[in-house]
Figure 1 (cartoon, rainbow, N blue to C red):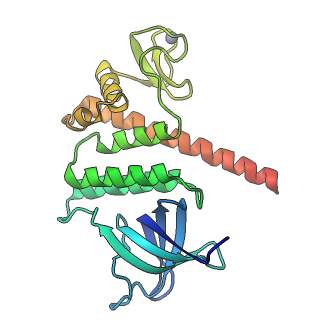
Figure 2: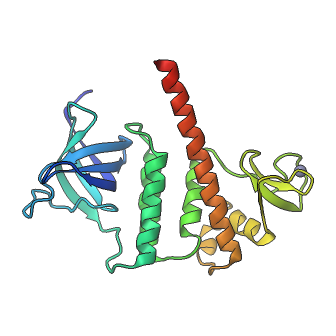
Length: 243
Ligand SMILES: [Zn+2]
């Protein structure tokens, strides 16, 4: 296990009460993957922590390895405020959706510095702007980082250049009329997805809400659920093999 204490930067994904004054914080750390830790006395009025340990807090931490799978927060200092200063419901909802996606995507104690960096970057974006594609674009980018990028330039089954009329992540992306399965894909939504995944993210984030942005959001959510479900099944399978 090495040194009993370690320093790391982290974003707080969620928190829950433990005892009267204690709280468990679930952290996306930069170097130690997802970590669950106890913050003792954090709910007392005079807490020894300089930083508030709330969802979306971006903090520098001193952590101690615990006897269980819970580590202990010894010190917390704020790095920056990522939560919107004024309670803006759109920003808050978008930020929470991102925290949840990373919470589901990250594995406990498996270093994933790219997830940490993507989350910090996305929360900074969310603090500055809202828009219908902020969260869907983040989902697609997360999936791309996991090696799941939908094929959007030709039919994912037969290679026909188009027209592409549906999307099915079981087949790896967009599909032509002959191969169609999964969800219908409009030309406008296809273009938006190409923008998000093809290096024109900023343009995509400025697009106003429309039927197409709504559609892209639906595809992103389904792709995310599909990925997480399949991974949960794989984990369950390995666990059965181990016992
Ligand atoms: Zn085809």
